[in-house]
Image (cartoon, rainbow, N blue to C red):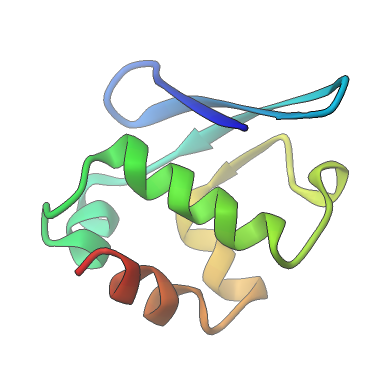
Length: 89
């Protein structure tokens, strides 16, 4: 289960629960990057949730940085933006 809480409009707290384990992350989302990926078609929270689904398909919960800017995902997974843009349609 992935829970996303908006902290202040550009910082979010993400909690991933898997069985008895609980993982917590702080994610920064720049306004320009949000619009670039979604054109405003989904909420920021939904974008982050979908981004975590993307990440969790590719790596384990404890491999994800505890604090990061969402736009760094593309540096590790070049297909990220294309996949997320398609998911936002």
